[in-house]
Image 1 (cartoon, one colour):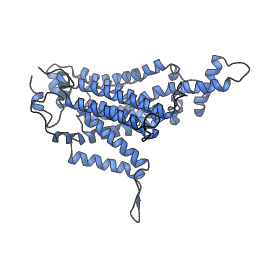
Image 2 (cartoon, one colour):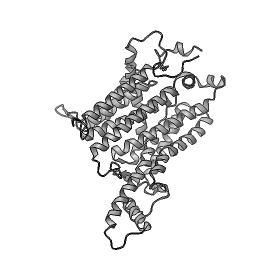
Image 3 (cartoon, rainbow, N blue to C red):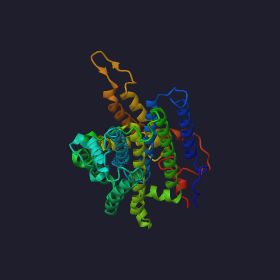
Image 4 (cartoon, rainbow, N blue to C red):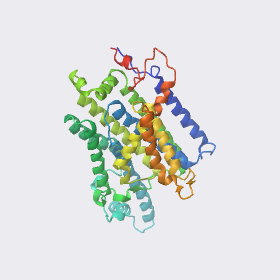
Length: 408
């Protein structure tokens, strides 16, 4: 009988949480407005966004590295979470601004006049003057937070139910997830989608009711929220992929037909993993975009989901800490290379500008890792000596204690 999931029995989980805690405290102590002022507010936001991307990568690792479903659509759920919270942020913030502007009139505006003025301010850029139906709950934070979970959960559940009951697997399932993402992004690009088309939602960094707080304090608040979400998500997925339940998930990845023959509910397990990871990705997106300040349809395009898969592959598929490591490394390197931090390299007849060559470098890194280190960066931890009687972290791949996985 397999041991129950405990932190003591899963040292990799304990170490990951410890590193995250030390990192969070260190950034807080060094941040502007709260600590010593060594780390700028903009970089604190970058680190907070990186933690959100780590959470999305961990979710992607569970659905791909553990369950074997190469989803090329999980960044779509990430974007849905951003749009859901962005609707409330834009509505509440615009309502405050419009109400202040109308306060000096001899007669106070009626609720209907205020609503029309807010709608005109938000949707005038796409030639509309009324709130679309999709904004029905945008004036309620509680309902929009509920939408962060419900909308991606229902979409993933419906898609997964249709795909898994039809037993679509492999590359065909990946193409379907990419098609779903493409359809969503093309719909969002339309002005009549109700989400401002190509303009997207902007000004999300201005949190209603916190005008007395500076961006330095708000950035720390979101940084802590992102760290907490990553810690809880990591614990959730570590529990999900442990014990007998985790063995069934990995068995589906390795030989789905045999698992079905043994009497396990393959379709139900895949649907649970797919839906749960989609919801967690949406929560990560809801925390990411208030720190980014803007979201547009390009954020949910298929390329974004491909990048997510690349991060997981570089970090090490089938290892939760590997996925987080890959996402953090690539995200920070991307910010450095594309933000002007990396110096240009003059070659006489041509100058390498990293803002143009970063994606090429990322592609070459992916190819190199695939060919030379298929376990990813997380595979480096296999070089660390381990106890012979190790009980926890039943990861897949070579050196991940497959002999123990086969024991009753």
